[in-house]
Length: 419
Image (cartoon, rainbow, N blue to C red):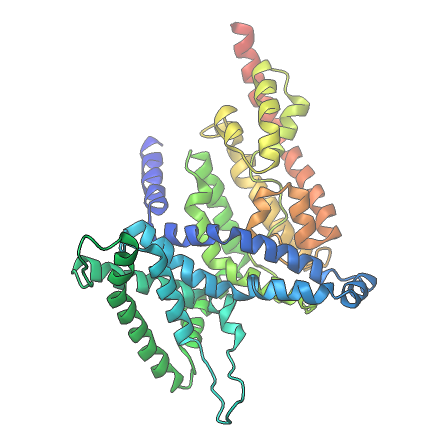
């Protein structure tokens, strides 16, 4: 068992230390203010009540919300193109100016985006917005990494413009970025021109076809989502941060599907994806156990730690309970924590959708749901039905914890009595 644990920790450590995954995760984390605002905007813009829709339309609120959504979630690919390259520069220290690397990647992203110049004089040019949002997500990630590697290559081989030491660092940093920036822009200019003349029409379409489509198929599979959640909580059980390890993979698989659902919802269209990495929330791990412990525990140690850990766990901070109870490496909690809770949440949500008791998720809470009380996230993603069924599933998970909590509390009572 110890050898297995050592191997598991080693494998997980490699994932957690993987620079590529950390770069992607860091970029998405920096997007949180934008995605949070865009999510709430989509929520308020898409509430399907006729009287409400008539009011926000007549008051001009709907137009304002639509504009905000377009320039937040609707431009997701643009922002990711900058942030991935920016994070790459932070991780690899490949330039004196991280912002220059990010801006270069952003320019390269726009270079490969189809741009129609009309034949008629004075007519307006057009830029298709569909590639600037979730559809351009994977192109943005690829361009961000390629741009970063070009800067890294130029730095290692001294392919930069060198200025005297007397030149202010701010000026010098920009000059050293000129050659790698030019190489990146020329490269993607050629790439964009080549694919513009093919049946695909653009580099975006190529990436969407060969990368996004297979990931879409994997991500929209309920069993893939279920296994990922089992692995995530299994890593936590072993004392490894499951969110840090599995988070970037989950984002890669489901972010585009969530953006598609959110876009359709705020536009009043049918939500396209049944599986989008979503499930009715029960908190982020320890909350159901805490409720069971607060009701049934009699030992002073258990009562003390559950009282201290309840408020943090309510807002998604589980570490005080994970390490303080402890739940980590505690075999008593393995079954309800790693197996029962994610299974009830993921497969229960899927079953409710199949039988029509729960709508498809609009994903307006998105990855921010883990920082919200579970009933708030469920209400945002699924409406009133999500609020109701989320509470039902939460109660089921609490009930599943009760015999295990009682068993652990009995152990602690015996220890206290012996002392």
